[in-house]
Picture 1 (cartoon, rainbow, N blue to C red):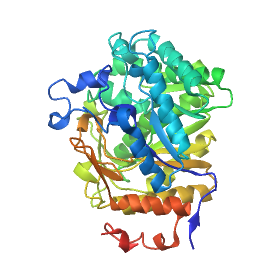
Picture 2: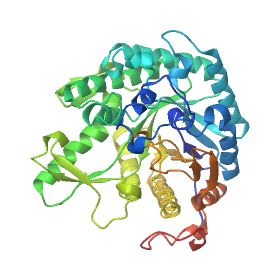
Picture 3: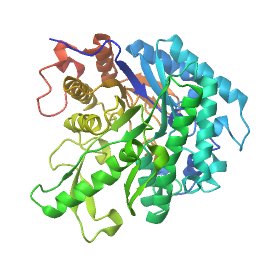
Picture 4: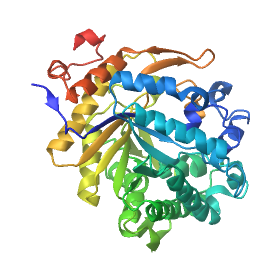
Length: 440
């Protein structure tokens, strides 16, 4: 028997502006790409997926797959290239794109900040500058004024935990530093900026739903019986996963420098966006203070996606959805879920099993409102350049040629059935990848 989802469930894909639009030259990521050694293989975003000129061709692909939703971001540096100066042509282009989605029956969810900052913000300290809180709030208010007739769902900040971890602790994202004190400063401003953006949107659009997209990954002890592994796994999980949402729920801060309050953050979640990719096994490493005394890796022998990106672990999606609901009692969207898999060896099975995980969460009473696969088409994958391929459609960035992977047909069949078709059920317990769509 087929496994059907609620009629109003959103079946979508997710993208971000810098990764797909092309030629976003006025932000900190474009500048970061020009620095030697920052991006694998010397890659640059360049034309990306050419969305600024021709997103509509990919919107047609979404419609052909039977999607009814898409999550995208607006590029702050296009809309406000200099402090206080609005680029009206960019406002018109984003309205055109949002209208294009609506005309194809695709409900947009818009992210206001997806990793990139305008150069003028970055040059004034970025997330370490308390003024960025108000600046993001102003950006959010204007976007609600410009696009609110087309958008009801807003994400304030994408993965603030990743912004802090990779930008301020590991140095792999802008500003490329490794400094815990600077990280704590950025964390506080990221949380306050979310609250400022949340309130700004609601001032313009009281009925809008506004949330955050948060990267969540189960962190389990590498050795269940080892006290040190259990402690460090719990500590890392609290810092990376739950501290952020706890602050936005209650205002209570249990951060790197002890307890405190971020009062303006209380109750600033209409929904929680869950970005789920993988889980970590964590091993206590007292010799590794640079890694907060914990080394991360996959479960030995478990399937792992391309280039060691992460363990393929569908059960983790059920776990995080259940825990988000138990902790915060807010509706949930799966705002990102995917894997790098250039050969499409694992993605068909990944889709079926992770959609099945959402079905299990729904059956447990978790109000999951939508699933957005990352991503529609291969795109520029930040510090990994073009080396990791997440798309249902492959892309040659030089020629812009696209081709549908078998997993695109799998997702199309899921969307057509508004759930898991009967022929997809019962085969997910086999070891290894499915060789082709016919294996279903």
